[in-house]
Length: 582
Ligand code: OXD
Ligand code: MN
Image 1 (cartoon, rainbow, N blue to C red):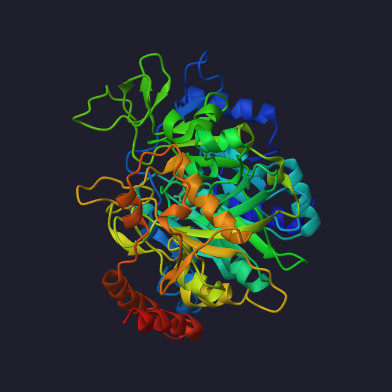
Image 2 (image 1 turned 180 degrees about the vertical axis):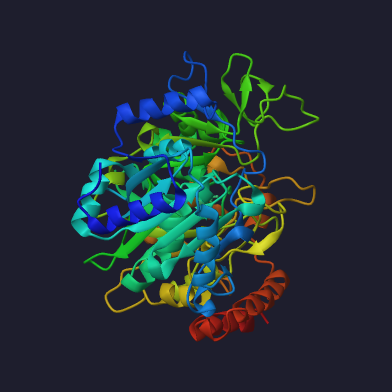
């Protein structure tokens, strides 16, 4: 098979030449194709079949032990001018990067099949969607892209109609960490990845396309590509409001997107609808509101910590047609990870007999891949070509202290400052130290494909005549007490905070104004059925003025890192708050 698009055929041919692939397979996305790939991977050990009775069509993949997470230090944005990539990215000159990658790709697919994957990010008929083609020598990547994107014949037809697509080239190479790079060429709409078979490094539709390249395109075209979940909250009156929420990797986006409200809320008729758990593309509609689509079609979620208690919806979608990566297994071959409330591990993620003293059963960044349609809270609004209107934007990080449970930004500019100054403790989703607080603007530090200073200005630019922008909030589910214990129960109980936010949106809830934003009083949060003592809630909603003064100084230093690319309106907003705190 080839395509009707000459530029696509030429590119595929040139890659086949360079990599010396034995065979070229154009993916059509069919069931038959998937069955053939799965059989091939079962026979070469890339996949292991899990218990057919309890988990039909579920497979385990064990990645190379040195290839278990995104590699931010090996991820580059290659723009002609280094200032366009900004201090938030690693930069390499495009010519130099191409030369390095060509040398790696030369002959790298000898003895391998090269798969050509046409894919669409977003509903296939949505004007907000964008397409790409990933070439890879990993059948595991093909199987994952099939779950995570609209992949195959329909995507190819759209690409042929539009004539434009993002070019992604991926080879697992030798899986050698010393020969591993994830390169982005936003000016060429191209991605090149070598040496890793892992998630965000290898499924190029996800972080590489839908965030780094898309954020660059979004700036040029007047929209936003964000690291956000999208969730619909239906109230007892039957009205649904959609919330887009940015949290860094492994900070509970999947759990919040699939939240099960506390019993009292369920009894009263509150419902939660999941549109997406990781990425959100938003653009102003005719009526001035922001409309969002989830460009993905599946979930690549963090397994450890997922349980009946924390995310029963996720558990319910994981008992068929799923791929598990780097989890442990029970004696009867069911997937197992830390946090599970039933079963016990027999083998760890590397296939060794489980020994708690040697290793956790699952790698802390072990993942599941599954179609979004399997989630009990799936809504067909995830396929709506026009997207869903966003009523509130939420920014949240992991902060043991200072940041209150919730606050509301006064206006858009203040909200952009809240997002830009977000900080969070690092997690196992990327290699490197875990638990270190770092600034992670809009949870996009690893994913913005251009200079953060320009990115902040782009966010501010949405505040214009006729715009009906969502309210912006900041949340922190991760406050700890002096003994290091989490103070807020989180998970389903986060619904209590979402209710306050949505009542602010509809003008039904009260707030007190403080220099750092508008906060509820403890009485404004519904605590029916919750065991939380009054003083804890008071502490969670208190504003530590001295702490915020120091925070504002640190934010000033951070904004200065982007020099004159940082919009002066953002600096002025920060200065205004600092003055009010003084
Ligand atoms: C992810 C991540 O995989 O953010 O979503 O690392
Ligand atoms: Mn993510």
